[in-house]
Length: 205
Image (tube, rainbow, N blue to C red; front, side):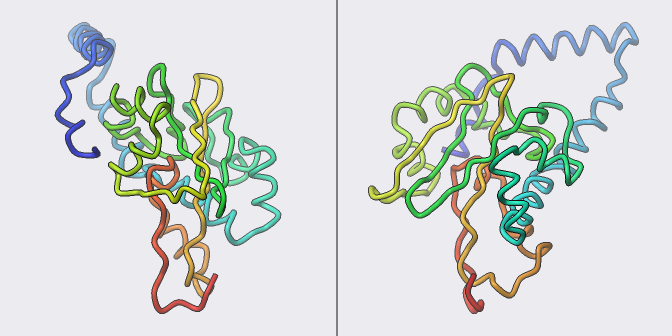
């Protein structure tokens, strides 16, 4: 599922945005290099790295984890990760009994300040329309087969509220520090379309 959506034709909104950008550039209102620089920050410098640090802190600091689940916006702000589309956050913790997955059915609301730019599949009509109806089938297409004993909860982001999934900490990571743990966390695991594999040769969680 992850691959073929990259070939989807641009949406009407994307075409309108591109046309507006072209018009503003031609009139000297927008500097295309400045736009590229902003996109580069979110794609390569922010990416999912900020969110991964939030997750790793929650794994290693029980007090922070409690604050994150109680008021994600404030807890994330402690690490300095607030900004565009990250002002109103809720953290969803995956457990042995519950697996959370996030979507935005109306458009593609996404917490840029913690996850960077949204992937193409997140914005696709196929994902947005199907994951709320048949989440297990969609997750299987991502390579994730959630056991029937685990409840799947789908959360619909809005312009006022965005979600961050806190994936389960992999087994075998008890010896890792916060920085090493953050390196294990993926964007898809924080959206809920993936889980993190256990670390072989570790010393437990």
